[in-house]
Amino acid sequence: MRRIGLRIAYLGTHFSGFQVQPDRRTVQGELCRCLSEYFGTVVRVTGCSRTDRGVHARDFHALAELEETASSVPTERLPLALRPYLPSDLSVLSAFDVTPDFHVRHDVISKEYRYSVYRAPSPDPFLADRTWHLSHRFENGYLEAMRQSAAHLVGRHDFAAFMAEGSEVQSTVRTIFRIEIEEQGGILTFSVVGDGFLYNMVRIIVGTLIDVAKGKMTPRDVLFALESRERKNAGQTAPPEGLCLWKVLY
Image (cartoon, rainbow, N blue to C red; front, side, top):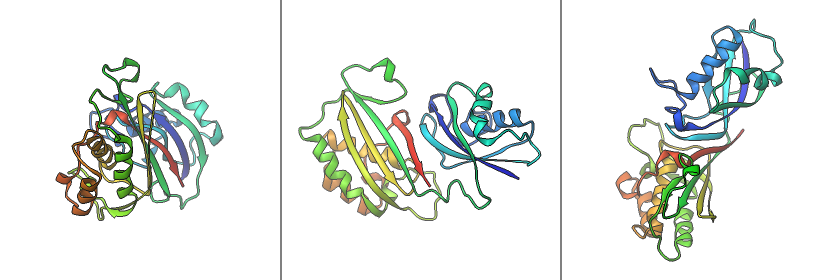
């Protein structure tokens, strides 16, 4: 069995998430189709994460598995060889051989997600599907209030309050290593780094921090929500288009 690691990037706008779904266009489905076309055999693809519909990825890792008898093209040349087979919103950045014991999900040390919010009276069409447009007025000192709130979430905690319904996991405990919030040119960027994330966890964190900026919640409310482990006590869920899987470390 030949096992190939792939670094890929994609715009999630026209994908129904990563995971294969019947009668829907997905990243996993497109990768399987393109790789199978190129190699002339069935190729199995596993991803490091399951991004939702509309969510983007700049540094996503996948594992392709196929029969050893398939094309013997050097692995490092695969990105160039695959280019004619791939759609314009999906790219293979690099390819590399991996050992038999490599696991594309379990071997991840950390993931960094970035979420972008565009603050302006009117939307910018060039930022459509890449940012969450907000025209609301924020409270004075909103950046400091959001940073104080985010500080409560850093560390190892039970993040049940920051998980959407519809996910079955053995544990809702995760570790957040860092949350950074910066603003430049009307764009707020939230960088969230952790060892793993629950369903919609980053989007709920961002939505909650935006509720703090609007004055609907306080840093103390965010701490209460975390400790309560009740979804109803956290804030809104930010829409998917502002979210990007930025970096994965092994």
